[in-house]
Amino acid sequence: MTDSQGLTENVKAPVDKIVEALTDFDSFPQWQSAVLEAEVLERDDEGRGSRIRMKVDAKIRKVEYIVKYSYDLPNSFSWAQESGDLKENTGVYRFDAKDDGSTDVTVDIVAEVGFFVPGR
Image (cartoon, rainbow, N blue to C red; front, side):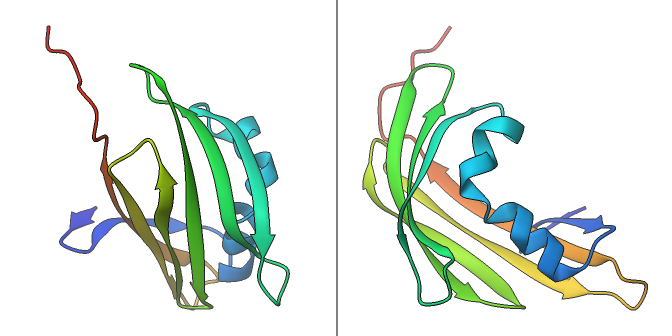
């Protein structure tokens, strides 16, 4: 379902398990086909990745960027590009735990390439 706050899906897992998967940056190349490399450059006081370097196959070319993560758990976490090949790369995951143990996960991403993309 899509709304003005991004794309929302119900995931049959509790918030902590979802966050664990979404912040296991080292495993990104194994389950996100476009991610070629993911490297944790810094961690916060709780050991979570807070500054991540990524190399992504954007089909037209491979792009690299560094993003800074901010956590407001269990409600959300967000990221913003610090440097790299994209003009803009920001996003947020929001979590709404349900009584049945599932979680509504909303993701809202803004990504702008910032380089020439040829037409047909």
